[in-house]
Length: 111
Image (cartoon, rainbow, N blue to C red; front, side, top):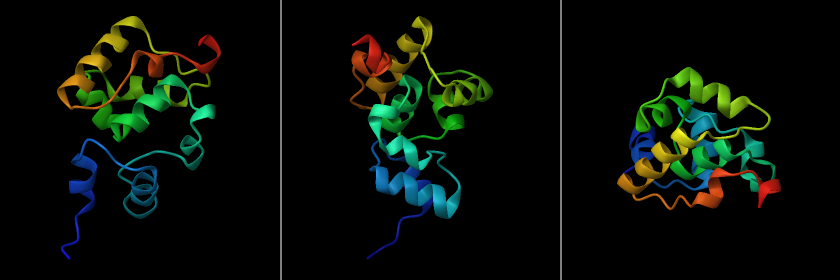
């Protein structure tokens, strides 16, 4: 069996939570804390990051935003996504064949 490099795994559009956590531990390429595996505790930005399977820098490149902006939003306790970023995320998800739904872009309490 040929072993995939961490970069090849990160470049795929869909990663399992276990793959993400393994990459975080072994290669420090994907920054997805363990508590993100529990979707009920995730902010909208954290849910989007998990769906894309990308670290903050790669997600920022995908939606043509600054990495520091995405990093700040991922750490923010509310993690709300503004309208322009929602549009960019939906477009990027469509291009990358990621199953991102509008419901993923709003907090649980609003539903």
